[in-house]
Length: 445
Image (cartoon, rainbow, N blue to C red; front, side):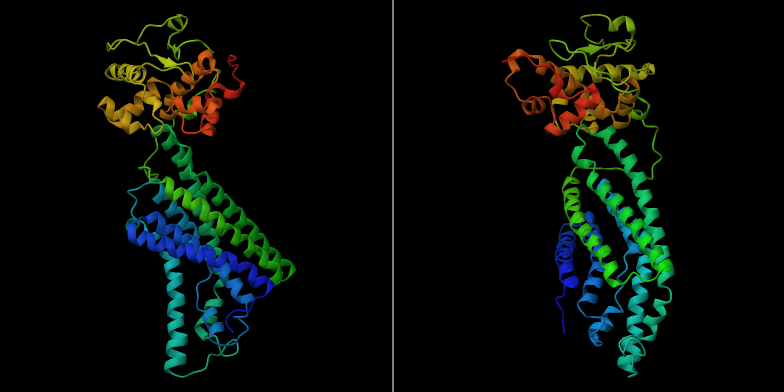
C-alpha cells in the first residue's frame, strides 16, 4: 500500500505536490544564484506543506498500514510552529535588505533545529539501534513505533505552546518592522507600490488569524471532547489554500526585491516626518506649469513668484502647492542645499523619471542621502516620496486643464508625469489633493 485515494486524502494532494515542487525549485535556484530570499521562501513553503502532508498521508492509510509507512510517520517533524514565525521574519529581512546575512541571524532557528535534531536522534535510537542493531521489536502502535517516539509524544503539548508563542511573537515583530519599512520606502523611493509587499503583510495577518482559529479549536477539543479527524481536516484544507497564497505573493515579492534595498530595522529610527504632517489640502487648479508656493504668507500671495535665489541667506522655498506642510527655517549651512535642490527639480525635472530614488537625487546634487533627506523632511515639510510626487501631481493638474491635451487619457497623462501606473497615479493624486484625477473638470476636445 503506497497511497489510498480517498475523499479526504485526494483533496489535499493538489496542495502538497505543487508546494513540494515549488519548494524544491526555489532551493535549487537559491543554490545556483545565492539568493537568500529564494531559499527562505522555499523553506517557508515546506513548513506549510508538512502538516498538510501529514494529514493527507494519514487519510491515505499510512498510520493504519502497520508497516514501514507507519514507522515513517512517527519520525518526521511535521509540526512547523517553532519555525514558521522565525523563518517568515528572516524572509522579510532578506527581502528588505540585500545585505542581510543568515549566518549572523541563524540563532532565530535554533529552537526548531533542536526540534528536528530530537526527531533525527530518536529515529537513530529507535529504528537504527534498538530495532535494526539489537533486533528488539518496537513496543508501540502494532510494532511500528519505538519508545523514543512515544517519549516525544509526552512533550507534544509543551512544544505546541512554545511554538504558538513563537509564531505570535515573531509575527508581531515582523508587523512592527513592516511599519518602519514603509517609512523607509517613503524616505528613499518615489515609486513604492511594488516594494510595499502588501501581499506578504496580508498573508502574515491571515496566518495569525488562522493561529487564533487553531487555538480556539484546540480549546474546544479539550473542553467539549475530541472534534475528530474529519472535523480537524478542514483546518488543514485551509492551510493548503495558504500554500497557494504564499506561492503567489512570495514569488511576486522575490521578483520586486531585485531593487536595491537596505532597510535595517535594528537601527534606531528617527522620528518620521510624515507622521507629523497635517492632512493634505486640495490643489488649486491653475493654468501654466506647476505653480510654486512660498513659505511665508506674504510671498504666498504673489501671483507670479520669482525663481528661488541660491544665496545662502535666502529663505524663499519654491514648492508645488501639493506640499503637505510648510517648510521650516533650516540651519544657515543647509539653506544653500535646499535652494540647489529646488532649482534642480525645476530645471532638470528629475521627477519625470518613475524610478527616481533619494540616492540618485543625492548623487546629482553631489551630497549624501542623510543630508538630502534632512533637507527634504525639515526644509520642505515632506518625506521624499511626497516631495517628488507633489511635482508629478502638479504637472498632472496642469495637463488635465490644458485644452491641447483634452484628448489624452488619464493613463497617458500619468505616464507623462512620471507615474508608473494608473493605480499609483490615482492613489497618490487623491492622497495629495483629496480627490481623484477623474473628478478634475477637463476641457472638451
